[in-house]
Length: 268
Image (cartoon, rainbow, N blue to C red; front, side, top):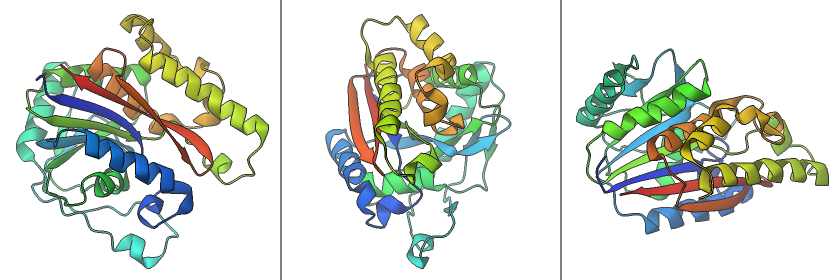
């Protein structure tokens, strides 16, 4: 891993809402634009999105990927969003090689485009769409240890000024987002967020313990309330597996009335 790699886990919001002026996403929009302003400009971006699951880790390999509007029930402008960033087949090949050399079966896909877990946050962070981007899938087993191992395998990448983004959501209970907020739901949300911040950012936790906590994340306070299904948490596992140390920065944002967290590592 080169000295100039940034790793970022972000909460990407609900569908295209951050791009449509939704008031429940104003703070998230502000945070993402602030983060992009603080980061060095990347030469390329690798995104692990919660919205792509495959039997093995799969990497977009097209030079000109399209967009997948993988949401429903939004106004017409949500399906006219454009983000014409180039792909980066050479980076895709490097990711594939890193995974297979670590003993993880992987494949390249030169047909799939980018889902909203990629283009929504990137359109906010890098609106010029001029930075090459590659997407890496989750594994559909949703096994936590597997995603930590994927992150560790990515340490073999040798790409200067690479930005690796885990695009998920630290809180992802769709029913709770649209239910009346209560002191109980707030307490459950915050208890899990506190556990997650401690797990990812504490200097007092050794890496073996950090991995163990994330492998058994369901034991965390109110884990299944915050994540009835874990696909939006697992991009964080990839980031932690890659970083292998506490995060440098924790950023909180209120999204649709719920506290959500983001983490940044600058790898040296």
